[in-house]
Length: 315
Image (cartoon, rainbow, N blue to C red; front, side, top):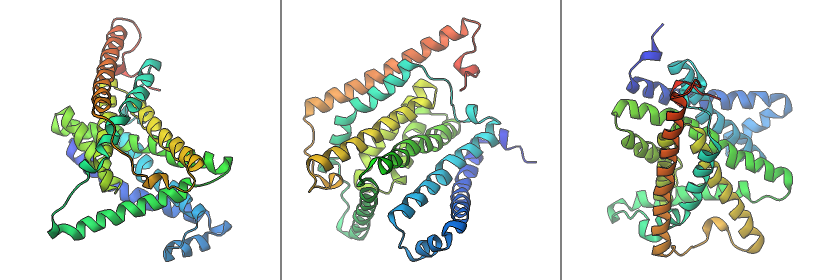
Protein backbone atom coordinates (compact mmCIF):
# COMPACT_ATOMS: atom_id res chain seq x y z
CA UNK A 1 0.00 0.00 0.00
CA UNK A 2 1.26 3.48 -0.89
CA UNK A 3 2.44 5.25 2.28
CA UNK A 4 0.13 8.30 2.05
CA UNK A 5 0.67 9.01 5.74
CA UNK A 6 4.25 10.07 5.10
CA UNK A 7 3.74 11.42 1.60
CA UNK A 8 4.94 14.93 0.64
CA UNK A 9 2.55 17.82 1.43
CA UNK A 10 2.06 18.61 -2.27
CA UNK A 11 0.92 15.05 -2.96
CA UNK A 12 -1.41 15.17 0.04
CA UNK A 13 -2.85 18.39 -1.36
CA UNK A 14 -3.50 16.76 -4.73
CA UNK A 15 -5.20 13.80 -3.03
CA UNK A 16 -7.41 16.17 -1.03
CA UNK A 17 -8.40 18.05 -4.19
CA UNK A 18 -9.24 14.71 -5.84
CA UNK A 19 -11.30 13.59 -2.86
CA UNK A 20 -13.54 16.68 -3.05
CA UNK A 21 -15.37 16.09 -6.38
CA UNK A 22 -15.49 12.32 -5.81
CA UNK A 23 -16.94 12.79 -2.34
CA UNK A 24 -19.56 15.36 -3.32
CA UNK A 25 -20.72 13.11 -6.17
CA UNK A 26 -20.92 9.97 -4.03
CA UNK A 27 -22.62 11.70 -1.08
CA UNK A 28 -25.12 13.52 -3.32
CA UNK A 29 -25.94 10.34 -5.23
CA UNK A 30 -26.32 8.34 -2.02
CA UNK A 31 -28.58 11.01 -0.54
CA UNK A 32 -30.83 10.97 -3.59
CA UNK A 33 -30.93 7.16 -3.70
CA UNK A 34 -32.01 7.15 -0.06
CA UNK A 35 -35.04 9.18 -1.12
CA UNK A 36 -36.18 6.71 -3.79
CA UNK A 37 -38.77 5.03 -1.53
CA UNK A 38 -40.08 8.50 -0.58
CA UNK A 39 -40.34 10.16 -3.98
CA UNK A 40 -36.69 10.18 -4.94
CA UNK A 41 -37.55 9.70 -8.62
CA UNK A 42 -39.37 13.05 -8.62
CA UNK A 43 -36.38 14.64 -6.90
CA UNK A 44 -34.00 13.28 -9.56
CA UNK A 45 -36.27 14.47 -12.38
CA UNK A 46 -36.59 17.95 -10.86
CA UNK A 47 -32.80 18.12 -10.40
CA UNK A 48 -32.14 17.17 -14.02
CA UNK A 49 -34.63 19.82 -15.20
CA UNK A 50 -33.29 22.49 -12.88
CA UNK A 51 -36.68 22.91 -11.20
CA UNK A 52 -35.99 21.94 -7.60
CA UNK A 53 -38.36 23.18 -4.93
CA UNK A 54 -37.04 25.14 -1.96
CA UNK A 55 -37.12 22.05 0.28
CA UNK A 56 -35.30 20.02 -2.39
CA UNK A 57 -32.70 22.77 -2.81
CA UNK A 58 -32.04 22.80 0.91
CA UNK A 59 -31.68 19.04 1.01
CA UNK A 60 -29.26 19.15 -1.90
CA UNK A 61 -27.30 21.92 -0.18
CA UNK A 62 -27.11 19.76 2.92
CA UNK A 63 -25.71 16.86 0.89
CA UNK A 64 -23.22 19.06 -0.93
CA UNK A 65 -22.01 20.66 2.30
CA UNK A 66 -21.29 17.23 3.72
CA UNK A 67 -19.80 15.86 0.52
CA UNK A 68 -17.66 18.85 -0.47
CA UNK A 69 -16.31 19.89 2.92
CA UNK A 70 -16.84 17.45 5.79
CA UNK A 71 -16.25 14.04 4.19
CA UNK A 72 -13.04 14.98 2.27
CA UNK A 73 -11.59 16.59 5.40
CA UNK A 74 -12.37 13.51 7.48
CA UNK A 75 -10.91 11.14 4.88
CA UNK A 76 -7.77 13.25 4.46
CA UNK A 77 -7.23 13.43 8.21
CA UNK A 78 -7.56 9.67 8.57
CA UNK A 79 -5.34 8.98 5.55
CA UNK A 80 -2.54 11.37 6.40
CA UNK A 81 -2.59 11.38 10.21
CA UNK A 82 -4.35 8.19 11.24
CA UNK A 83 -6.53 10.29 13.53
CA UNK A 84 -9.34 12.71 12.74
CA UNK A 85 -8.75 14.76 15.89
CA UNK A 86 -5.02 15.09 15.31
CA UNK A 87 -5.28 15.50 11.55
CA UNK A 88 -7.85 18.31 11.79
CA UNK A 89 -6.35 19.99 14.88
CA UNK A 90 -9.41 19.38 17.02
CA UNK A 91 -7.44 20.21 20.14
CA UNK A 92 -9.29 21.10 23.29
CA UNK A 93 -10.03 24.84 23.32
CA UNK A 94 -10.15 27.14 26.31
CA UNK A 95 -13.18 29.26 27.17
CA UNK A 96 -11.03 32.38 26.94
CA UNK A 97 -9.77 31.39 23.51
CA UNK A 98 -13.32 30.82 22.23
CA UNK A 99 -14.37 34.20 23.61
CA UNK A 100 -11.41 35.88 21.90
CA UNK A 101 -12.35 34.21 18.60
CA UNK A 102 -15.89 35.56 18.79
CA UNK A 103 -14.70 39.03 19.84
CA UNK A 104 -12.28 39.06 16.91
CA UNK A 105 -14.99 38.45 14.32
CA UNK A 106 -17.41 40.92 15.90
CA UNK A 107 -14.71 43.56 16.27
CA UNK A 108 -13.60 43.13 12.66
CA UNK A 109 -17.06 43.88 11.22
CA UNK A 110 -16.39 47.60 10.51
CA UNK A 111 -13.24 46.62 8.62
CA UNK A 112 -15.17 43.94 6.72
CA UNK A 113 -17.92 46.45 5.81
CA UNK A 114 -15.30 48.93 4.64
CA UNK A 115 -13.82 46.32 2.30
CA UNK A 116 -17.34 45.69 0.96
CA UNK A 117 -17.71 49.35 -0.09
CA UNK A 118 -17.61 50.48 -3.73
CA UNK A 119 -13.97 51.54 -3.43
CA UNK A 120 -12.98 47.87 -3.12
CA UNK A 121 -15.23 46.53 -5.86
CA UNK A 122 -13.14 44.79 -8.54
CA UNK A 123 -13.04 46.89 -11.71
CA UNK A 124 -12.08 45.21 -14.98
CA UNK A 125 -11.08 46.90 -18.25
CA UNK A 126 -13.58 47.14 -21.10
CA UNK A 127 -11.90 44.25 -22.88
CA UNK A 128 -13.00 42.03 -19.98
CA UNK A 129 -16.57 43.24 -19.71
CA UNK A 130 -17.82 39.74 -20.47
CA UNK A 131 -16.01 38.46 -17.39
CA UNK A 132 -17.31 41.39 -15.35
CA UNK A 133 -20.90 40.62 -16.38
CA UNK A 134 -20.41 36.95 -15.51
CA UNK A 135 -19.15 37.95 -12.05
CA UNK A 136 -22.21 40.16 -11.58
CA UNK A 137 -24.57 37.39 -12.65
CA UNK A 138 -22.82 34.90 -10.40
CA UNK A 139 -23.15 37.24 -7.41
CA UNK A 140 -26.84 37.84 -8.13
CA UNK A 141 -27.54 34.11 -8.55
CA UNK A 142 -25.87 33.23 -5.24
CA UNK A 143 -27.69 36.05 -3.43
CA UNK A 144 -31.00 34.97 -4.96
CA UNK A 145 -30.52 31.41 -3.68
CA UNK A 146 -29.45 32.62 -0.22
CA UNK A 147 -32.51 34.89 -0.06
CA UNK A 148 -34.81 31.97 -0.90
CA UNK A 149 -33.17 29.90 1.82
CA UNK A 150 -33.37 32.57 4.51
CA UNK A 151 -36.71 34.24 3.81
CA UNK A 152 -38.82 31.77 5.76
CA UNK A 153 -41.30 32.00 8.62
CA UNK A 154 -41.85 29.70 11.58
CA UNK A 155 -39.58 28.02 14.09
CA UNK A 156 -38.83 24.73 12.25
CA UNK A 157 -37.58 26.46 9.04
CA UNK A 158 -35.57 28.89 11.16
CA UNK A 159 -33.90 26.06 13.08
CA UNK A 160 -33.12 24.23 9.83
CA UNK A 161 -31.61 27.43 8.41
CA UNK A 162 -29.54 27.71 11.57
CA UNK A 163 -28.16 24.24 10.83
CA UNK A 164 -27.77 24.73 7.08
CA UNK A 165 -26.50 28.31 6.93
CA UNK A 166 -24.68 28.71 10.25
CA UNK A 167 -23.59 25.44 11.86
CA UNK A 168 -22.68 23.33 8.82
CA UNK A 169 -20.65 26.03 7.00
CA UNK A 170 -18.81 26.91 10.20
CA UNK A 171 -17.94 23.27 10.84
CA UNK A 172 -17.49 21.93 7.31
CA UNK A 173 -15.69 24.85 5.67
CA UNK A 174 -13.29 25.18 8.59
CA UNK A 175 -12.58 21.45 8.58
CA UNK A 176 -11.61 21.63 4.91
CA UNK A 177 -9.89 25.02 4.64
CA UNK A 178 -8.31 25.62 8.03
CA UNK A 179 -8.19 22.01 9.27
CA UNK A 180 -6.88 20.36 6.09
CA UNK A 181 -5.80 22.82 3.43
CA UNK A 182 -3.98 25.46 5.48
CA UNK A 183 -1.71 22.99 7.36
CA UNK A 184 -0.87 21.24 4.08
CA UNK A 185 0.08 24.53 2.46
CA UNK A 186 2.07 25.51 5.54
CA UNK A 187 4.09 22.28 5.42
CA UNK A 188 4.57 22.61 1.66
CA UNK A 189 5.54 26.31 1.59
CA UNK A 190 7.21 26.43 5.03
CA UNK A 191 5.68 29.91 5.39
CA UNK A 192 2.77 30.09 7.85
CA UNK A 193 1.56 33.55 6.82
CA UNK A 194 1.63 32.66 3.13
CA UNK A 195 -0.42 29.54 3.91
CA UNK A 196 -2.97 31.64 5.83
CA UNK A 197 -3.48 34.11 3.00
CA UNK A 198 -3.43 31.56 0.19
CA UNK A 199 -6.04 29.51 2.02
CA UNK A 200 -8.09 32.68 2.56
CA UNK A 201 -7.84 33.44 -1.17
CA UNK A 202 -9.15 29.99 -2.09
CA UNK A 203 -11.82 30.24 0.60
CA UNK A 204 -13.11 33.52 -0.82
CA UNK A 205 -12.93 32.37 -4.45
CA UNK A 206 -14.84 29.17 -3.62
CA UNK A 207 -17.96 31.18 -2.71
CA UNK A 208 -18.26 32.54 -6.28
CA UNK A 209 -19.25 35.97 -4.92
CA UNK A 210 -16.54 38.04 -6.55
CA UNK A 211 -18.04 41.46 -5.80
CA UNK A 212 -17.55 40.71 -2.11
CA UNK A 213 -14.24 38.94 -2.60
CA UNK A 214 -12.12 41.19 -0.38
CA UNK A 215 -14.33 41.13 2.74
CA UNK A 216 -14.43 37.34 2.57
CA UNK A 217 -10.67 37.24 1.95
CA UNK A 218 -10.13 39.19 5.17
CA UNK A 219 -12.54 36.95 7.07
CA UNK A 220 -10.70 33.87 5.78
CA UNK A 221 -7.37 35.33 6.87
CA UNK A 222 -8.67 36.11 10.37
CA UNK A 223 -9.97 32.56 10.68
CA UNK A 224 -6.61 31.29 9.48
CA UNK A 225 -4.76 33.28 12.14
CA UNK A 226 -7.14 31.92 14.78
CA UNK A 227 -5.81 28.46 13.90
CA UNK A 228 -2.21 29.60 13.55
CA UNK A 229 -2.12 31.38 16.91
CA UNK A 230 -4.68 29.30 18.78
CA UNK A 231 -3.49 25.83 17.64
CA UNK A 232 -7.05 24.51 17.70
CA UNK A 233 -9.64 24.28 14.92
CA UNK A 234 -12.37 25.09 17.44
CA UNK A 235 -11.32 28.76 17.39
CA UNK A 236 -11.91 29.38 13.66
CA UNK A 237 -15.09 27.31 13.92
CA UNK A 238 -16.29 29.59 16.72
CA UNK A 239 -15.35 32.67 14.70
CA UNK A 240 -17.05 31.39 11.55
CA UNK A 241 -20.14 30.46 13.55
CA UNK A 242 -20.26 33.97 15.04
CA UNK A 243 -20.01 35.60 11.61
CA UNK A 244 -22.76 33.45 10.08
CA UNK A 245 -25.04 33.80 13.08
CA UNK A 246 -24.66 37.57 12.98
CA UNK A 247 -25.59 37.58 9.28
CA UNK A 248 -28.67 35.43 9.97
CA UNK A 249 -29.83 37.64 12.84
CA UNK A 250 -29.34 40.83 10.81
CA UNK A 251 -31.21 39.35 7.84
CA UNK A 252 -34.29 38.60 9.93
CA UNK A 253 -34.01 41.92 11.77
CA UNK A 254 -34.19 43.87 8.50
CA UNK A 255 -36.95 41.63 7.14
CA UNK A 256 -39.01 42.43 10.25
CA UNK A 257 -38.26 46.16 10.38
CA UNK A 258 -38.08 46.84 6.62
CA UNK A 259 -40.10 44.05 4.96
CA UNK A 260 -40.09 45.83 1.59
CA UNK A 261 -36.28 45.62 1.38
CA UNK A 262 -34.07 42.69 0.46
CA UNK A 263 -31.33 42.77 3.14
CA UNK A 264 -28.88 41.12 0.74
CA UNK A 265 -29.24 43.99 -1.72
CA UNK A 266 -29.20 46.90 0.71
CA UNK A 267 -26.75 49.67 -0.07
CA UNK A 268 -24.70 50.51 3.00
CA UNK A 269 -22.45 53.50 3.42
CA UNK A 270 -18.92 52.56 4.46
CA UNK A 271 -18.09 53.02 8.15
CA UNK A 272 -16.14 56.08 9.23
CA UNK A 273 -12.38 55.89 8.99
CA UNK A 274 -11.84 56.12 12.75
CA UNK A 275 -14.11 53.12 13.25
CA UNK A 276 -12.25 51.15 10.59
CA UNK A 277 -8.92 52.03 12.26
CA UNK A 278 -10.28 51.00 15.65
CA UNK A 279 -11.56 47.74 14.17
CA UNK A 280 -8.15 47.00 12.65
CA UNK A 281 -6.35 47.75 15.91
CA UNK A 282 -8.80 45.63 17.92
CA UNK A 283 -8.35 42.71 15.52
CA UNK A 284 -4.57 42.83 15.88
CA UNK A 285 -4.78 43.09 19.68
CA UNK A 286 -7.18 40.14 19.94
CA UNK A 287 -4.95 37.96 17.76
CA UNK A 288 -1.90 38.89 19.83
CA UNK A 289 -3.86 38.14 23.00
CA UNK A 290 -4.82 34.71 21.64
CA UNK A 291 -1.21 34.01 20.64
CA UNK A 292 0.03 34.97 24.10
CA UNK A 293 -2.73 32.97 25.79
CA UNK A 294 -1.89 29.85 23.75
CA UNK A 295 1.85 30.14 24.40
CA UNK A 296 1.22 30.57 28.12
CA UNK A 297 -1.14 27.60 28.14
CA UNK A 298 1.38 25.44 26.28
CA UNK A 299 4.18 26.47 28.61
CA UNK A 300 2.09 25.63 31.68
CA UNK A 301 1.16 22.25 30.19
CA UNK A 302 4.76 21.38 29.37
CA UNK A 303 5.81 22.18 32.94
CA UNK A 304 3.15 19.94 34.43
CA UNK A 305 2.28 16.29 34.14
CA UNK A 306 -0.66 17.07 31.85
CA UNK A 307 -0.05 16.59 28.11
CA UNK A 308 0.54 19.77 26.13
CA UNK A 309 -1.46 20.94 23.15
CA UNK A 310 1.29 19.76 20.86
CA UNK A 311 1.32 16.37 22.53
CA UNK A 312 -2.31 15.58 21.94
CA UNK A 313 -4.92 17.22 24.11
CA UNK A 314 -7.61 16.33 21.65
CA UNK A 315 -11.34 16.32 22.06
